[in-house]
Length: 109
Length: 115
Image (cartoon, rainbow over all chains, first blue to last red; front, side):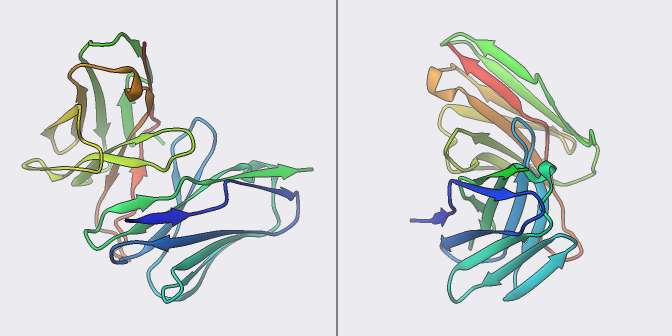
């Protein structure tokens, strides 16, 4: 079967750094996405990794290790507005997205 | 950003009723998708369409049907709604991007309650 694992919930402090992990077991791999979803709203695209390594975009970075079936999203200089769920999704051999259940990130002042 | 719109935004219906959820996009994308989201579960794909004449079942198509009326419109129907179809439904679109990711853009969602 196909499986995406992420922690259910994490808590961090404003101004700090947090790392959200994602491990996957899928039938094939054609890329990994991270999306942000505020409560009651649509998911919005954050990052895409298809090759091993780190992709940096401002305060957000995403890392991929295909051999380990592992990715993480790193958020720096946390702001209250970063309180949201973060969804990991893998594009499988059929080019369909398999989604994790998401990690709810709570930011405390 | 109203590039992908969904109607209605909220709907309460009774068991056995037929209901249609509509999605329109102005992004010019060829690919469109319908997902449902339930608490504690990841987004699950119901149907997807790569162009007007191409419609495919997703992971959980039973109890649902779709219609791609035009490149910009993709409707989801529940022929006879049942309570376990209560969920948040999202429409999404995609097209080939510079990095070939085909990242998906989501509509605002329709919250459907079946009583």
